[in-house]
Image (cartoon, rainbow, N blue to C red):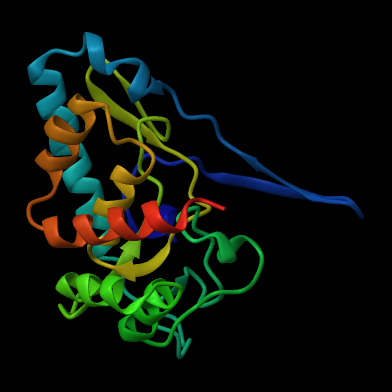
Length: 208
């Protein structure tokens, strides 16, 4: 879908090889190095160019039409269960949700009333459901000479509330200021309440 509907520089599928034990996906190689290895040596102009590139690619993702017949609003690209490292159960069972309200209920069900009340600060705000990479971090964005050359690791992609891309960009990286301030906040505006709530919930729940 990304290959057909966007100009995002992502690996292209070539073939699938299956054995009785497992399957292997053969893909093209994309050039560049993870941006996390480059940020300390990038100029301000190169960082600005990365922000411009990333804004454009995320806009392309969000314009992908939802041409699936699934009754589930929040799901993977084909309407099935999604995989997300933020949500441990997604690694053990098929998770998908008919609405953002159902998704929010699932995220807050493990917690007591005070936490659910705090989460309502963002969960009571309706969001568009858009196609999302779901794991944009300094390891999964490749760059060369100050330009993005590849975006990899699409296993978490799917249909999620519009803030999910932003909050997930903070999920595994909370101390790399050039990433968080210069790049992530340069790409997105808003979603501060959503980030506060997501940080609270993920800190309380933990990754496993």
